Length: 105
Image (tube, rainbow, N blue to C red; front, top):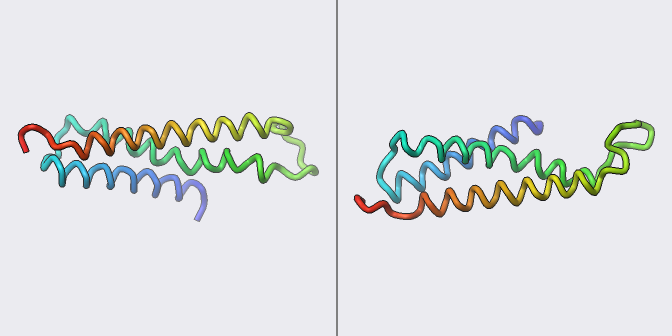
């Protein structure tokens, strides 16, 4: 399984988790929550490529291949780390909001 498939599965898993928690805790599935599901898909799908970028510092391109990324491993790692942290913070916020019971339930 490649990075693209893992990214899609990660996004779907995040969306399903947020959706299930929302339905169980708030007992509703309404259009006002669609934005949360879209954001959870994007944040969840962002984690595998971010980890891939973060791991680039440990597995750079071989010396025989000249790329424009050479000597920028630290910056790529920090970019990947920042994306992972941002995605996890977003998913945590969405999960926390989904877990809160709405006033009518």
